[in-house]
Amino acid sequence: MQQRAQWIDGILEKRISTLMPSLMKESGIDMWILISREYNEDPILKTLLPATWLSARRTTILVFALNKQGKVDAYAVAPYNVGSVFKKAWDKKAHPNQWHALNSLIENLQPNKIGLNQSQYWQHADGLVATDKENFLANLPSAYHNRIVSAEKLAVSWLEQRIPEEIEKYKDIVAIAHSIIAEGFSNKVIIPGKTTTNELIWWFRERVRELKLQVWFHPSIMIQRADQRQFDHEASFTDGYGNNVIQKGDLLHVDFGINYLRLNTDTQQHAYVLKEGETAAPTYLVEALNKANQLQDIFTRQFKVGRTGNEVLKTSLDKAKSKGLKPAIYTHPLGYHGHAAGTTLGMWDKQNGVPGDGDYPLHLNTAYSIELNNAIFIEEWNKEIRVMLEEDAFFDQSGVWYLNGRQTELLLVR
Image (tube, helix red, strand yellow):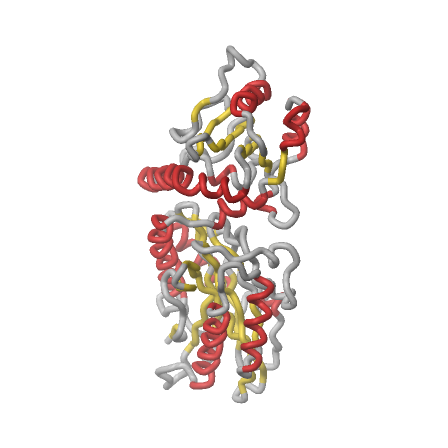
């Protein structure tokens, strides 16, 4: 845990020194103020706290200011020292009132635009609560009120942009998530005819805790099999056959994500439970997976800087349908949050585009959970199934590439 904390603090310092200046310049904001009270933290402020700070303390105010040299100075107007990155900016003897200490800093730096975390479309960038805003404005000299702007663009950029050191570690984090799925979808855990979906779900929870990790959502297990039950997307993640016994011939699906070093994974993969005498999955299921891989390729090839999520969504769906596929795409940014800030590329129930965050353009050096499904009719089962895939990827100048590969073969349970 100590090594993890050292890594987190080192990355935070490097992000602030190397990434924050360009983000503030691009947004046109020369002062960014984040205000939070203990246990009611702004989602972004939590990404800026030292690793040993598990929450804000009392009222914690962090301030970033562009200086004349084009670098960023980081200040903490807080009752305690906030790690080594932030300069302490509250002298209680000079300013017994915390808001007056903040005003003194503002008057000293004379910012042209003061960014506050308010956003209509990204909850991550809407972390300034009503009471904190009221207190801030009530104490702020009126001359500065017309300099206040939404920090939405800056906030989203901070959350979505990754630096090289993070990406190198991200590869390992996704590899860990993949290894846990492979272990769960094996005979080490599953005994066909005995193990239930609920038991498998809780195995994932227990395994994650054994590794001193955390999940950011409760995993789900879904079964598709040769029966009369039809696919229901909404029910699949809340029911998925409920606490049902896993049988030979089942197509299993897992939705699973971990949080490690403040970064999140989000993965969906499939496994097939072999029947007696089988040594491989049936050809029709192998082909179904191949079609879903084809959809992934069509989709990720449409990523271009400046294109909006809605533009990429429409182009991808049109191209996939022209190839005879039956696609649904619902891809989201990934990073400090599982469902992160940035460009949204469809939702499972919004295949005609997503207002707001779907209109946001793609930027380089951003991570995504490539989440989608392809429907295909299985004659042998006399029903339509969905191959639902979700793999974590990175978008840079080379295009979209998977952080630890992707599933191209069904996992097998013997």
